[in-house]
Image (cartoon, rainbow, N blue to C red):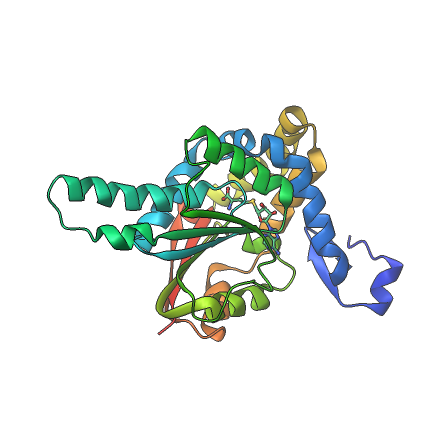
Length: 275
Ligand SMILES: C[S@@+](CC[C@H](N)C(=O)[O-])C[C@H]1O[C@@H](n2cnc3c(N)ncnc32)[C@H](O)[C@@H]1O
């Protein structure tokens, strides 16, 4: 049963999980969710996905094919999980250079990976993890507070754009896509990793049971926060299907749009190029 607040009578409504809320409130409510779960975010990810989120993120970054000198933007990237992988991929090219494969050293100095997230608590988690990895002083990593819907970057300034488990949370997905398109250079690639829709009978029932019965309970036990994890599973069901989301990406101007389902559609990686 949708819950309707009196404010909705005067404002556009949007979904916050299965609830309808005024558009201007969604961002604050999503902010509350991530401020609440930030400290337990990593452990909950490992538990909920039985560690698979690491492989899914590896896959995303392997599709990106990072290169020395790259200007890359990871949006909703608070934990740094994607940014660290992008840098690691570039460092691994550097190690290959040492073992004889030619890599432009000057270009490597120019590498910049920007991590943009709306939530300071999530950025703090990422910064602490960077320090633990010995990347606290890395010039190539730049942490910024910002909104996917209004990026503080110049037009055509990025070679790559990633967003992992983030776009589901933004209020206007179309605005985030159009911002992704704006900041990418011609030839730049958009990649989005997101929880998506399972369409395999039998597996879908199992996945529904796991989502609605197990995840909120685990959230309550491990993170002391059932509601945030209830929002998480509801927001997955409200997110557009793989096909619909691919259409939205095309409508934002991207070309060669395609997607890959992982784990039967539990997650999907969507890709598009600005040509
Ligand atoms: C589920 S976490 C994903 C974090 C990281 N990308 C990962 O894969 O581990 C979602 C992130 O999206 C961020 N977020 C939500 N709305 C946003 C917005 N409008 N602009 C930028 N970041 C946003 C949250 O603060 C949170 O850090």
